[in-house]
Length: 216
Image 1 (cartoon, helix red, strand yellow):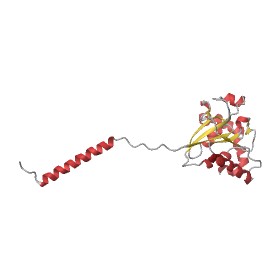
Image 2 (spheres, one colour):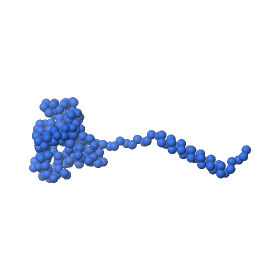
Image 3 (tube, rainbow, N blue to C red):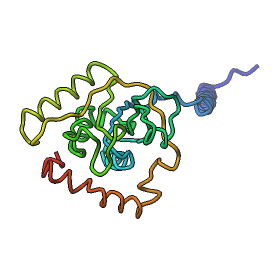
Image 4 (cartoon, helix red, strand yellow):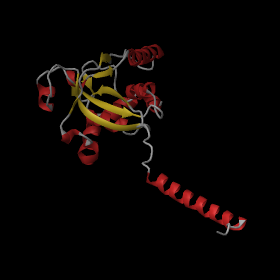
């Protein structure tokens, strides 16, 4: 048998290497891509009167990824809008804000919240009066409570408002999403929403209270 020459062996070895590389790459392409960890999101719950308006305000904040109107703070399970607004269930109209903490901090959200409500009104907000329209921050842990209480103390100390802040800081409880027609109401019914917000005097009152601090 004739022994293969050196050039022949070299060519064969090269072809074998190319084939191995081809099949290795093909196998790698068929492998499922490694799963990446889901984005870490956080949530906060605020009551600031009409939840249509609170939802609209927070949707403007960079880093907020979702807002849901709902009810919290009462004892009744699965409350309806009629029950909350007319039957004294103890619930607040509130908004659950889901946000990316890498883009916006809880401190910033609390600060923003105060500057878009009247935290000195113990009876409700703007043209809406009653327990369900009062302001409150629903905290999930002691760190959130400390942020909210510190913000209140700083506002009172600053003297920017003529009256003291009466917004409650409440331990978070079950949040019940409101009926579908309440969700994104300002987008679904822009004309009705704008008429309501204007006639209720929300923006005018906030501007009178806070002045340029609303942009803080």
